[in-house]
Length: 173
Image (tube, rainbow, N blue to C red; front, side):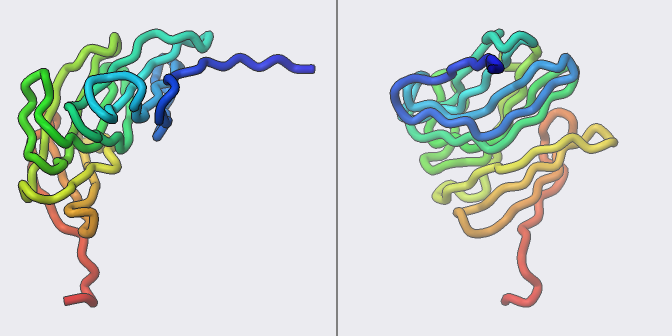
């Protein structure tokens, strides 16, 4: 009979894992949402486990409403998280009354290194669903605008928008 080791993360409400990556240190980073903990109804949750599976650190990102986790990646310096924020955050990150695309980076100890928002229309529900590092040091981030239109953003190493393009089917007018 084999024994397995597991770490329980979350509480007694709606807590879900959305994505996981293994960092260059061979330790997992888990991205999810939590309604059990944090500041609002639902917050973005990020945790790092040690090599032995114990919790190294955890962070909750979000405002007072239903914030959503999209995806993450990690390199040897930071963990990058994308998703959406709904309302102004107690850390002072101001967002529109509906959801805006969101990008955050955390250092290897889980401290927030940077946060950025991307507003396309103040009255739509926008969400970043994927983020990746390109070989030139820029980032590509993909998501949806108003839950209908795909959007691709090219970001520089500071998270500033170099360009953005809606993803449209050329056969549809």
